[in-house]
Length: 249
Image (cartoon, rainbow, N blue to C red; front, side, top):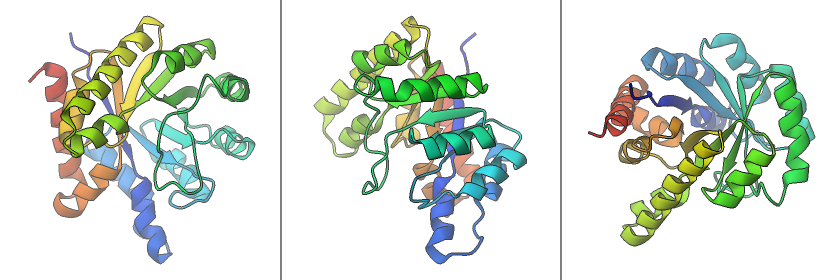
């Protein structure tokens, strides 16, 4: 039987809209509950250093309110580690973070930052939190993740989707081949393989066709689509696209 690909819905940009005016609305926790009701398998939220969207109390409320796994995206800093250990989410995804970036621009330099990352992976794992590393789909990064004993990697799909969006067919093909090879390498090393960044319906359908992919985390596109069709409809269409990709349709 073909394994179903899980869908994690990132609700960061509900908080972005809230923070544009201040106050409490729209509430990202309400969005998370609606996403789960619509079929999301989990909720992802990124607590950034500058708190540009998700805030500390959002993480606490999400953990208390939702019935599905909470995936806490964060930079590998002592402050974030303390917060994650206090919240105790189901999972933590360690991501690179720059103050000036609009969104996460690439994967972690796992090989170069191995000594820095090792205590974060170890301490979170000891606390019973599943650790994921957000990385580029290359062999060196995947092997470094294995050396750190990270149980999960999330492959950065942004370069592939940006090339496809710009009509750069040859580059998009090369980037997809990197993702295909990276997913296979991760699985061969016993690492669970997720993917995310820049995925729309078509991108999710294509990446779900890779048999090693277990989970997709998607946010910006779904929140944008929800403006026009509603969050439940956007998630239902995304779920159908992922299932079609996994089925080879």
